Amino acid sequence: MIFLFSRSKFKVAFFALPTLGAALLALPPSTQHRLSLLFASPETAMNESAPDQASLASEFQRQGLLQKSLDYTLAHPLFGVGPDQFATAVFGEASKEGEHVPWLGTHNTYTQVSSECGIPALIFYCGPILLCFRLNYRLYQRTRNHAAYREMAGLSLCLLAATLVYSLSTFFFHIAYSISLPALAGFSVALHFASRSFLDGVQYSRATPE
Image (cartoon, rainbow, N blue to C red; front, side, top):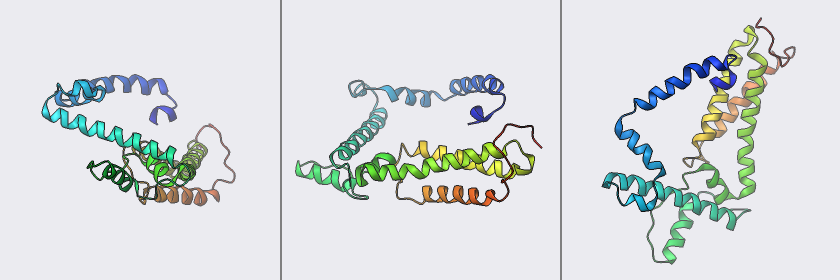
């Protein structure tokens, strides 16, 4: 985000790329080894140490849960298997085949919504996220060049960053029914309406700061 919104993208890249390279080189060997396992296959996992095999088993399990959630989405596209019922459905399906599986969620918020509530619900779930992006980006663009509205620009940028973090991090855990998104959307909408009375005369521009 710093790169995208910076007026001196070349300077940001000039300092950021060497810093990133130095940070990667400074990682502990154990961390570098763990990152290298991200591309390991089930066949090569058998040659790893016991701790690495446990880590890879967890990774493969999450991949399997993701695939299962996609399967449920396609099998029940309108209403899903029921809100917060993914683990129940997986456990029930495994029990019919005489298998025992751990009680786990989808580890992905988007497929949690689609598999438990259906594709229409996923569309409605993504709506507030896109709205937060739109409102905060437009407000930041409208206020960034005006010194009098510095606080609004800062607030909108923080909410824009929070929306980005939320939308990306929820690819890796299931929190669809938490208060996080309603709170983020509430703050974004509140800031939008609170700023309207101050910004009637401000146009979208890149003018010199006042």
